[in-house]
Picture (tube, rainbow, N blue to C red):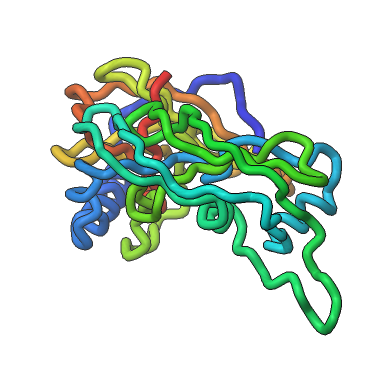
Length: 272
């Protein structure tokens, strides 16, 4: 995916966009998702928030395949922390231990197999810490374990919060499929002020007459766009564009989630 430097025009939502936005919002309401999001904290990035394997592609594949051994020397348990989600009351929780935290980043597999060792990586150290993570409410300090070991160039930093403390980002999976193929989803939405968003709208490299739209309700904001078609080209590069648009809201967000029109995927909003 690439980003275009050209800003899209923002125009009033046409009927086809409005109808789809209403369907998406209704689907999110039907299961209680929107109501839940008023008090939930959604992690808007992977649980492994830092670290890596440099140019060692084999080590990376081994890790994400779960072929990782935790050395017996790695000991430790969870510890009490106070989370301070933006806009919500503080929450006291107990973190996970190192093994449970490692399981969040990769599903650990048994190392023994047919008389031979299968695991290609060994984690030999784990250290407590904290980092700033991105939630749908803005940045929040979260507890982490920092893992070190053979083949790990930079310590692997994994959020150490138990399942249920952070809510998985929802989508409107039950919403009807769009009937009109000229609807465009969005890659992200960043709040630049109480009533302003920068939305990056998806399109192919050859689509023309792109426009951005917004639809608002009391409990949700739906963003995305429409396209005028392919612009008369016979073939188009397989390239996905994400073009920014500056959207003005009718009233302040006030904690309303921002979702994209095609899938209902939660975009945040992020905060600039």
